[in-house]
Image (cartoon, rainbow, N blue to C red; front, side, top):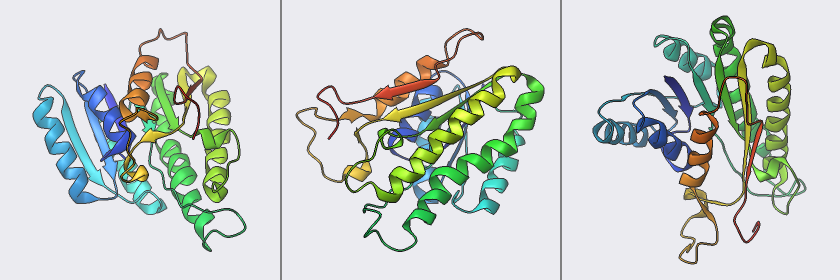
Length: 232
């Protein structure tokens, strides 16, 4: 299968890529950091030689780069799975977050998924199959202290997911919105998870992989994952 994963150089995106890489697929990976993306792709190709690991660095907060990445992906054929994982987090409340924060996060968290999906959909619709995953957040479901513009942008991504699901039902294309709670990624810095308080990125990846294994007539519309002891 041809699988597109954005934000694939680390964290959840990298874990998702590793899950699909282990199953002999063609992976088309994207991230902003060219050095880290190349290191990730080269390591995965060595670990999963039966898969084809391709990569293109791009800043998906910029529409021109989104379109360039989409056109690059289409060289390899119509995607079977699209995972919109690219995201950005800037802490702050609406009343005090840095000026421009909402715009920056909307560009990365919503518009990148919106523009990339629109560019890839014609081929998927013509093919009559495919699966789109939008990596939302628990912040897409309820407000929280310090969430501000981030929560707003993720609420918007959820709205995009729901509308997309409704529109694509007749075309055989599945849409799944994924809502992870606290996951141990770089955004947690040096957080000590020795007590296993928060989830691993592999937890999210495992659920996404499982959702792709269903029959054509079944879809997991939403995946909500939280730490066993609840949100932080």
